[in-house]
Image (cartoon, rainbow, N blue to C red; front, side, top):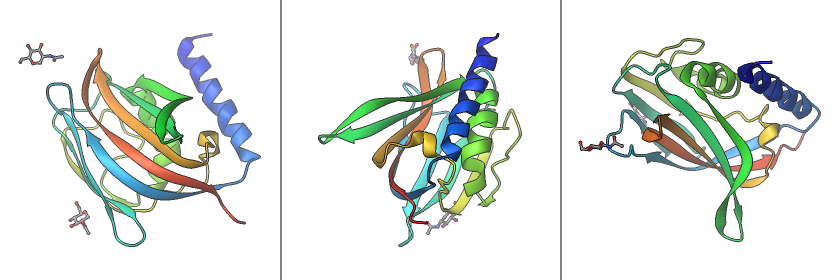
Length: 175
Ligand SMILES: *[C@@H]1O[C@H](CO)[C@@H](O)[C@H](O)[C@H]1NC(C)=O
Ligand SMILES: *[C@@H]1O[C@H](CO)[C@@H](O)[C@H](O)[C@H]1NC(C)=O
């Protein structure tokens, strides 16, 4: 079995086990952009806006986002005041990441946006996302409740070209 297929099966089995758990409610605590080691080719200019704490802003891709790059997400949780890495981690080449992670877990939240979904590569340019309320209903595999930090990092080789740190408060939804 190829490694890619194994990863896909792993994600599917995780997603399946999530179905039997309760949906999650998500509050956006903070957003901060991660600069590249030398240059920031993928620039996230997002802010938390309004009382509803929505994600709002733009992504500036200074080059085409294609399979020359890898995207990873690492989830950390707050333990005794320190961020500790959890075992939740996904790292794929761009197109695989977009189809497995973005299209499945994030695209549903991005309603007022021109960020393409189900598309790869994504052409260089500036894309907006307005008033995004993160819908965490199918995120139960990230079911570390409480304060959770997701670090989304764009790399080529071991060099970082940009990213985003997102801090969320995840709670079980009261049904
Ligand atoms: C960063 O930039 C310097 C100077 O342009 C260059 O010598 C170096 O190789 C670059 N490092 C990386 C990791 O791209
Ligand atoms: C939200 O983002 C849009 C698009 O980038 C921008 O035009 C607007 O001013 C932003 N709204 C707030 C409240 O920052």
